[in-house]
Length: 103
Image 1 (cartoon, rainbow, N blue to C red):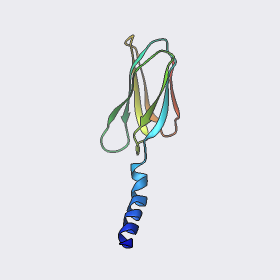
Image 2 (cartoon, helix red, strand yellow):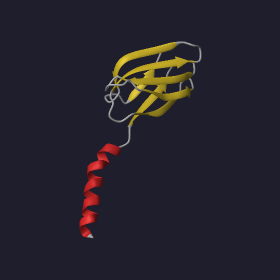
Image 3 (cartoon, rainbow, N blue to C red):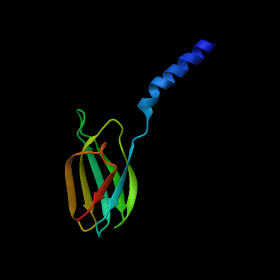
């Protein structure tokens, strides 16, 4: 009986890093218009995956988002209520703590 408990404990210790949470990232909208959507597209790995970080962030507002675990390099695109956009290619979001959207 003890042996099975030890085995389960070892398996949990090995798998714990794999199920860790995604990295938190603060998004600040310093523009004078609502951010309707902020999308990131992963550049790591074989397939490019897109993730929506934020929807409808008020002008001057801030919110926390999460970067998917195991990925760091992203193209970032923001779309605003006035139909303007901004984009940044090849951002290392593992090295960032904040994305600040300015004019």
